[in-house]
Figure 1 (cartoon, helix red, strand yellow):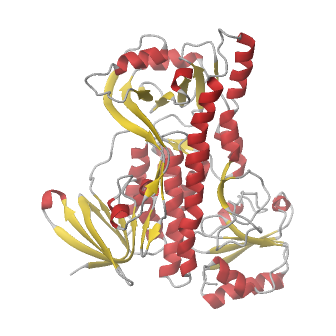
Figure 2 (cartoon, rainbow, N blue to C red; figure 1 turned 90 degrees about the vertical axis):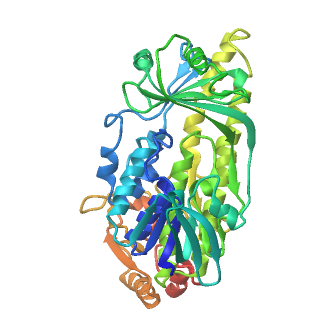
Figure 3 (spheres, rainbow, N blue to C red; figure 1 turned 135 degrees about the vertical axis):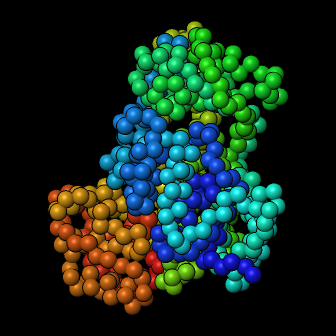
Length: 529
């Protein structure tokens, strides 16, 4: 007889485990199925944005996450970019995510993905309503109008089970069994470029880089590579490194001199002890849709791209939070079908633009800029061009502001669309992430937000209007709280006295007075209109 849950999560990487944690904390019973028992030792997915750290704040995992870092507290996160090699006279250390720190409640951080995953696994283990099936693999998926059934097999065929649930989510990576079995196709840009990944230890490299500003990543740009990166990333501060670079298509561990390549990129001899040598294909891929019936996909199952800019893991965790509260709302009876539909309508455009505009277009743009002029052709012109090249990171950080203005569950502006492009401002805007501002009693507005329902921030607002919205939520069974303060002390920067915020800290409505039909408002944002 099948074991019954509300949600089955297939795939136990950081996105799958994060979704299970999020659902479990919302009171949803779920099962997580993952082939691997242990954790990977490949240090990918290291850069966690300020937005991602906010998720850990609401999961109550800030201290655990900070303690799991492998670099010292406060070690600068960002990059140094070099022309042709680390030994070049031309380099710059552009500003990074610190440029937008004021618009989030937490600073960003950096740690290997396996450390992040370890923190999430430990939290999941403490949730009594989440069952984990590590060492089990999903073999087949069936669904009807009422449920999803997944057959799972234990490692080496030692056992078989059938799990049944109201919904299932595939978080099982770029080669997703779930995505394939529910018939969702993917498309994107294939650069037809093989890349090498080296994981190694070298105190020589650490010593050589001490003359530059301390950073977590060192990027080497060569005009011959047409915008493709060669870059070193720190695992710790002392000896742990990884290195990505384009290589010929027929390269193997046996026929390619990867140490020679590494020394060429450095411009000097460097002693290394290698822990891993692997290869991967440079491509961007996005699923045509994120849902088929009662089955959803998230993370790399829905979208994948090169490790440029830390977009992959951060977007996957945003998928998990976006979908988690919506599934819980539907299962608990206060969210409607439109709420579930909005998951793909919000998240897919964001990643499609991320992949094509912030990654693929960046590779093309940087390749073209590097080939405009060389120092040998015109030194002054090159130096001006190189100075302009250094502004690209700042542009990307400031303009990457995912928003859901066009969502069916947001009262956004006329003609609004869901997009990865935006700008960081204090002003509250429907469809955008809320910027935290200080409260009179101390702390900030994020301290008042509920992850289990909607929060109405009311700043010297009319009590009659507050009551109207509160009663509308109550009549619909929508979890709701009110947080009051004065419309001063900086909070006037929101430019609205009433701001309705959903469980993932995005604004869905704002105004100085309540709408004429508060019930219609709450139906809209709960996906029940």
